[in-house]
Image 1: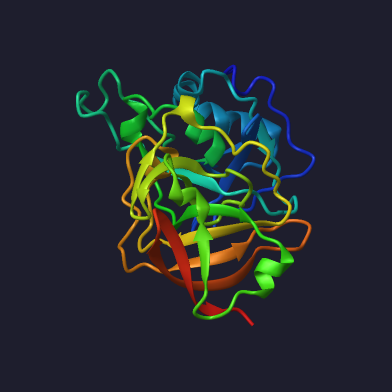
Image 2: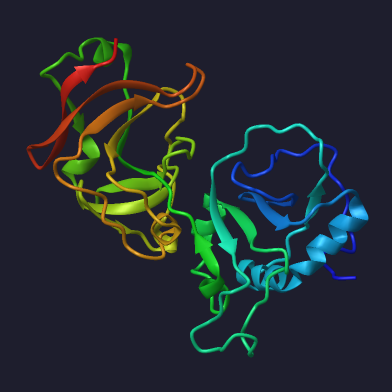
Length: 297
């Protein structure tokens, strides 16, 4: 039996439901990491742990490739059917297709990774883990087909007091102090990622529409900043971004100068995330400000 399946046990509960678009049964697996849970979907009907071990064995080449990419071997656990679903953090999603092969290797030749006969597997990786990894090597990179995701560019994270909030009105402005000195850092993230101090891919901003991902050695959360009472100025992005851009493997073009920005209170002790205001970005001294045009009720 494969090293991936020899200690396989069903979970007591599973935070997973079948993919909404799946026409056939799926076997669900997950593995914990320090950056969140990795998930795997394998096509096929699984009734018990023995079936699950067979399903996991069917995609052993993929698991071996993931082990080599991660630099460690995740401890996969079967998510038994019939267990309740619950919410899970945002993940990057990719399908692993049997038909794919590297450009340098013909189908069936050396360097090819074959998927289970039942169809493509699906892999889901937490964004923090993806951002700690280099781009996947060939042939794995040629066979992972990533889903694009709606994205948000955070231009500033602020801590505003009640006086500042009560003084906001149409025609006013919210200054972005971080934009008024170099280097100006922001964060690019999937739209459904949770907002927290420094969450997302740190980027260097030459302007609100020019973002360059920072090298991993330069990425650090803002020192001394609490999630309590945290507000963000976010730029609306006109199109989805692919995983390579949101992971920082390639540069991203955030959007157009006409894009609107908005002010949000982040989720925390005060409740869920809340939209507060929106408007256009405008130059302000050596930096930028959000010109308030529309305020929430």
